[in-house]
Image (cartoon, rainbow, N blue to C red; front, side):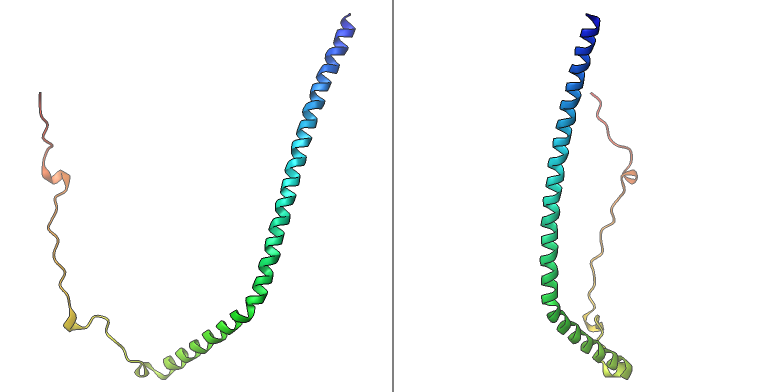
Length: 119
């Protein structure tokens, strides 16, 4: 009887382990399928974005050309000297404003020892 019981116990454990292995493989398969779906979605988004970028490139080229022209004008102004630019003082003397002074505040240690009430 011992041999038969041992064989049944072995078969029972083997079935349990096989069941757990099946559950794990099923879970992993589901995860792989989800990852593949997510990868497909991300690739579709990436390809649609690259199409948008290539379509908008013409507009970006025009913007860069305009910026290059403005930078060229600024460089010419700087090369001509600062006399070509009118320097404006951001704080003219006739508009000087006085700021009110803050009242001095005491730190807690300057106030003295805390007052405690005794009951």
